[in-house]
Length: 466
Image (tube, rainbow, N blue to C red; front, side, top):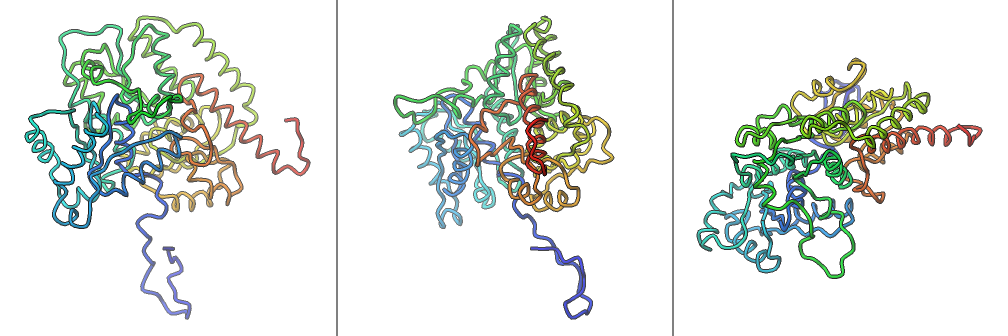
């Protein structure tokens, strides 16, 4: 629905007022149960179970499969019209029984949808009733409330991480001196692998929650697995309360009432290092400083060499990026980290948009963007229509975000750097590396080359030497 800003009718008589805008046009977000499903997929032997209609599970599977290019099973209690009126308790019980019979999961992750939340199904009571009826046999069930109207896929992701930690992590009187917890934002599979590798370089073992790098990007199978191998085991999650420290890599979780990292600190006494998504030199420096403090080791020479090469690359390509502008959109933590990186290399992130209604969004960006916020628009809780409207006005040189931005990039005649989630129209979105100096080097090269390709494409001479 377009907004009528003219306030006059075609006949020239005064209209009653502006036509109200639609609530959402092409949302710049996905639903909360999708984030829950990603976390559940990062736990060994876990099957995600949505209490609601079959369509919700199908929608989420479609998005995850097209991004990760892997099979994704998500069970559902499959509401009918009668269930929507009288409640889904019977469907829930039958669904759980079928899941156990067919999948033999180690854990069932139960997330709610808009429908089950709206009719008021009491999930904790239903779970208790089921377990009482079955003498607590079978795998444990963990519940998280994720109606889509309560938040985005990012919100569902963090709510589920917290729910898992609160249910399974155990307080301990001793510390695993070389074990560190890593609670990442919604990162790529390549990021998760690299974070584990970086910990090993500092002599640390790590527990990642979630860790879907194998379950959502595994190798070829000789035989089909109903539940993909890999993920963080329940035993590892139980021991998170005994780790020597937690690294929570999320700007957006620093200001919430309770996060998984802050819970481990308050309930289990695990020291918390609250950091952002480590994209760029400065934010990566913070990660490596924390790893040095936890391990008692200096930065390994091979990582220092990566940093030196990155600094040299910044110098080499500075003339190609200095003074350029970009519009960013996606999950809050991705946008903040990317905005910090862009400002570090001389690209102004003039539009920073997220579909999440992130508290203190402008302040979070202000703390990370070099050069102040005078020319930066911080857009929170927006859709692609609002982003497109502002981008047409601001005319950025580059668009950075998911595949959903392609129509806008095409309209504006600017490059789209496909990053984050979901990437539907290219291969390898799950393998893009962003974190640390190595990941920054890769995204830096992509940013520079995007500007160079655009310069060549629209050049009258079509020169090949830049």
